Length: 281
Length: 270
Image (tube, rainbow over all chains, first blue to last red; front, side):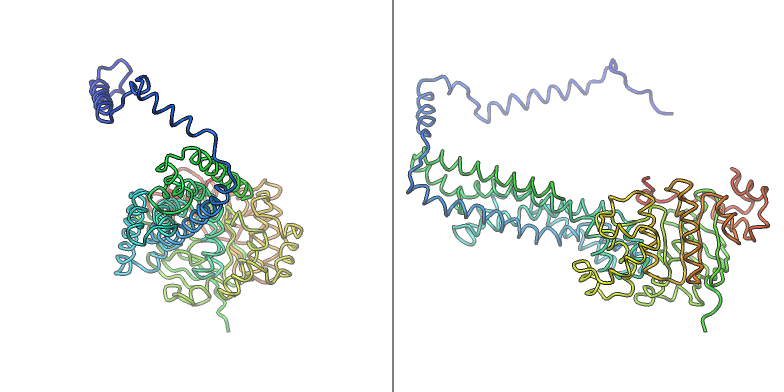
């Protein structure tokens, strides 16, 4: 028989152990992360903060400066679009390979018809490889990718595009494969039973089922890519981010304000566009 | 000359993954143009039988011949050609909800179309006329351009029938075609299927939950229970005692063990 269920009053020591551990971790983090609210109250700290905040106002709105920022702004959009495109090109095929219903059974339990031979072993290897690559791609933060690509291909927008492409490719591939796993097989079976070939089943039964979901998720990721491309600029990967970095280094905080306003409009704009498109799906 | 026998099953047995016996020692002969109803409690193996009859799954052992051809010998192109000649209507209609009705109907042509031709048709529908005629035949010609998931259950079942019409197969298999529609509509759909098979001299096999429909519209009735055939007889010989035995809780004497349960992912979500 099952053991009697634990009631609220039962005396387990686990809550106390975990509670104690949690407090220890919290206290240690406080010390090691050098959290020091005192800085907001000391005279010197306050002065620094005040200079920073007042320095940011008013935003730099001179025509010369704004004109200079048109290119980086466009560049940010271009980085996000190209990066997302590359992410789709990486994520879609890898996502397919990382889908067990695909790799092991074919679209429709073809293993029933093909059996398990070396062919099957090969598919299992591909499946594992695809999953491994996808987790590698997304476990390394896009910031680190950008850093490496800047070293590899030099400063400019291209390393930013590659960084977003690879890191987001990993995320897209993972989510795509989850979408692919949830495809309803019944319509596929019905289409197969009309004598359709595998690719015909793919385009008539499978693709229409996944298209709305993957479009929606890809748009959402593009939205994130706009924001990310700004961060990537900080390591020299072009766009608005690079301008923010330059302005901060030159202590031109009022320019930073303008750039943050531009960034905000970009992200809000991307948000609006993708919401609009997704509502049509 | 085509052989007169549409289906010839000899000692067919089907065992699924974890040793679930779905079908045991199944013999069956169906002549060309014949009209047969299959009845029996759920879990009797009717759907498994149909999925073998339309070459979706293979028997574990035994012989399955369609039109004189041994299905075990068919692979690739010849297998697809065999599938093209068998049209199936499913309980859940199994349409692609996001596609327009016309593409769901025209997917019945895929066995005859080339890959490129079928892709082109997604952008610019070919044989629109064929699709429209089929839909008109099942009474919903005006739904040609609607999105499939906007249709009611009964209308979707008609789309599935239209798909079989444009496929123009030798055999129509209908697996519980009316279990998701209301009773009055059920009768209409059964009549429609019979009219279609009569007009074009197609063999018609129907799985039915309702013994009433089976007994009133089909000359031959097969009773299935726990993976075996309990009776196979002219409708006039079906007695209340036979039906009682078919639906009683007791397994038949030569029962095939555990009734087959569908794997999790195939379970019906109504």
